[in-house]
Image (cartoon, rainbow, N blue to C red; front, side, top):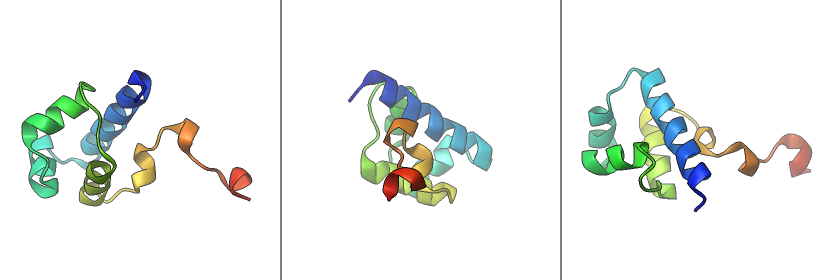
Length: 80
């Protein structure tokens, strides 16, 4: 995967964790993603899997679309 996409996704997840008021440890515990793995992915040293992004979105009560880079989002004008 493109490094810029990995970095964008890591930043989006990190920002969502901060905005939720949760800790990385609590997100790790709830999602089952080991803490060292979560830290590595938040540092953009490896990429999140789709299932991990879904687990994080559920834990933070946000839409998984929040972790989709803009170039991959479908807008209403493009969906028709």
